[in-house]
Each structure stands twice: as structure tokens, then as C-alpha cells.
Length: 111
Image (cartoon, rainbow, N blue to C red; front, side, top):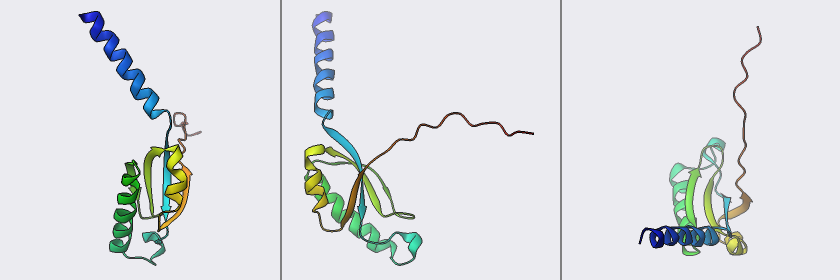
């Protein structure tokens, strides 16, 4: 029984990996200016983010995060095949991959 459980867990993990293999993490930049530009109101940004996020979720996207001060954008995980549809959502300015920057440990100051 324990062996059956272990095999079931392995196959479940493989199925999850196969499902997530075609997903990508992207930034969806929106058309409403960011708060730092002082050309937009916080309520307008929040409204646009909610509207676009609802459409993204209808496409199967999962929200990873939001920004609104320096940039008005949503980070989402979505199937790569859905990216052309994402780009056609009203209010979407651009779609770009999330890039992770691996920084080394801090360098001590030179005296």
C-alpha cells in the first residue's frame, strides 16, 4: 500500500509538472499611466487593473502581483498559447516575460 501511495504521489507530481510546463510568467503593462507620472488617479489604476485581471482570469491566468507606482502592470502566470489573446485585451499596452535577476551576496565596502 505504501508503494502504491508513493507511486501515486510521483505520478501526481509529474502531471502537475506537465501542466505547468506550458505556462509562462509575464508582466502585462496597462495603458493607464502609473502613479509616479501624476497623470492618473489611484482609483482609475485600480479599476483598470481589476477589469483587465478579470479578463486574464477568464483566460486561465493566475495573478502573481501588481505594481502601480512606477509602472501600471500585473504579473500573471498563463498558458503561452493564450498570449496573443492577452495582447488584444482592451487596456493592455504590452506583454513581456518576467525576468529573475540572480544577484550574488553583497560586496563589503572597501576601506
